Image (cartoon, rainbow, N blue to C red; front, top):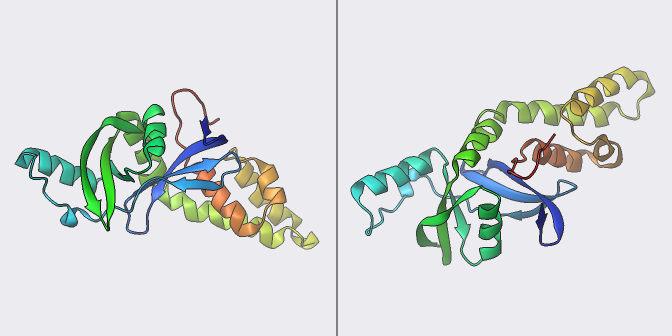
Length: 194
């Protein structure tokens, strides 16, 4: 898929405060844009006066479970891109001003929720493991005596489907980020990630 004339992928992860983070990365798995804001914890959720108590409760629960995303409404092309690719519902759930910015909150689609569970909630423990493998590869890459350790790390990374040329041509921390984005890609209806 294309985003601003770049081959692009949509990736899920978490902001530092654990809120859902949606990034768009290019074909080299370098971030083009972070789409979402780090939404505040549910206890900061402001009841929406125009919604019923039940609707406000549902929104609070969606915030707790990270099933709602806050996006800057001054970036309609980003919102449209995520909607076109089945990540966000078409209708805005609610809007508010956050530090002077007009923020719209959108529900994730059912498909996006399923993938979020796999990518963010279930996968977190693997991030450290695969980051360690990349660092291990670079540690032993130029050490002839450690060729077997380097090959072992490369084999583990290769098994993820990650393009090895990034590993062989990149720098350590750059490759760590690329591999994590690669692993956090969302599959949209028109593509397969494998």
